[in-house]
Image (cartoon, rainbow, N blue to C red; front, side, top):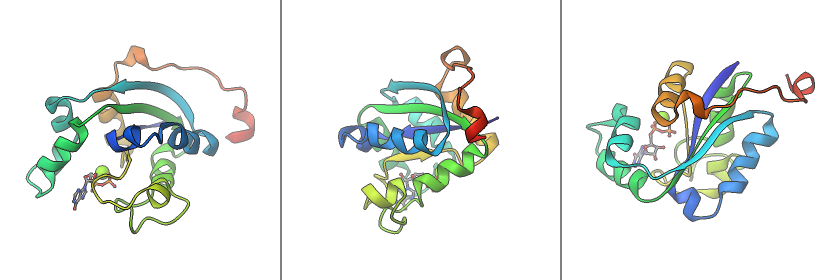
Length: 148
Ligand code: IDP
Ligand code: MG
């Protein structure tokens, strides 16, 4: 079973889109394995976005992630990483297609509501960064046979 880390970034929380965004992942058939609200500090923000260090938007990006609470989630299911990225849409909300989270609710490049891991390997690293293993819950969902 593949897992992915999804964050509802501070703009999504402030804009009261938490329920709407969770619903997209839930309705698709992914299964929620962990969820919590986190006020990211500089260390967590820097570790999460370490790959972007040195880019012109890096400092602003860290300030954005630190600017308020984030909802951190682990979703699992078949092809969870790619499925979640498709549900999110591309980075720039202005270009992301309608029907995607960013396409439906965002216009900004930076303030684009959600983060989703971009590979299975990064997903495992990011899950370990945001969650303790004992915060994740393994269970059988009763509709498994129907969803796959
Ligand atoms: P992704 O979130 O779609 O994977 P990345 O390229 O990994 O996009 O960038 C990480 C985050 O950095 C984006 O989600 C967005 O918040 C921000 N970002 C990316 N490119 C820019 C930019 O050109 N200007 C400002 N912020 C950016
Ligand atoms: Mg990325």
